[in-house]
Every structure is written in structure tokens, then in C-alpha cells.
Image (cartoon, rainbow, N blue to C red; front, side, top):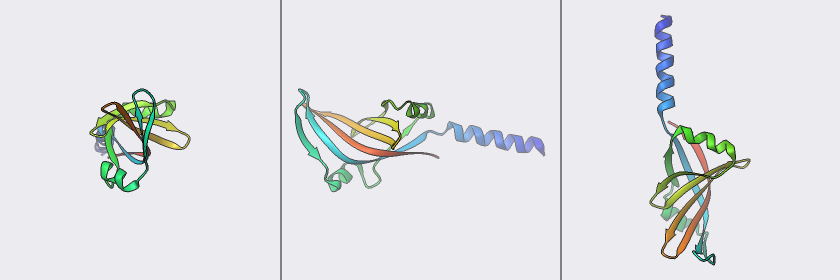
Amino acid sequence: MKKIILILLFSNFIIFSANAAKVNCMFMNGYTISKNGAWVATEDDFMKLMDLFGAEGLNLEIDNSLLAKLDTKQPFFAGETSNGKVYLNGGDAGVEGRAIKIEGDNIVIYYGFCTVGFG
């Protein structure tokens, strides 16, 4: 009986530790900056942002090994989507997210807050 319990506990540990963390980011605004540094535009229309990222926001799976980087309070590359490269930064206020995309001669940066979950 003890062996069965140990095997079940161990197999659950392997299953849960192998899953990737799931990140969900809701973006509140975005800025467009030219490559030479000029501020071109601001996007804060919630409906446009929802059209861009969907009603559930941006969803991304990241390796569990990247989760430790949230504690460093330094931004790190988490992955890439059709909306650009995604960077995360853990801090006192939670997890901040940035989606950064180059469009022609402009850099578009979307800002938001993220949640991290498992399973």
C-alpha cells in the first residue's frame, strides 16, 4: 500500500512539474515610437486593444525555468506571438507585460499586467 501511494505521489509530481506555465496578459495601452525616437501615437481605446489581443488577452505558455526570472525584477524575453515579442517583468505590483513589434519605421509597445498560472 505504501508503494502505491508513493508511486501516485511521485507520478503526480512529474506530471505537474512537466507542464508549462501559462501567462495571460491584458493590455491597457500602447505607444508607437519612430525608430529615431519620436513619439508618433498612443493607443488606449480598449475596444481596439481587445480586437488586437482578443477578449481573453494575450495567452502564452512559458517554460517553468523562466518563472524564476520573475523574482529578479528584471525584464526578460518570454516568447513571441503575432503581436510581437513578449517581455515580462516581476515586481511589487505583480507581473508586467510588454508586447513589442516593429512595423515599418515604427516600434509599437503595448503595456499591460499579467497573471501566471499552471495546468
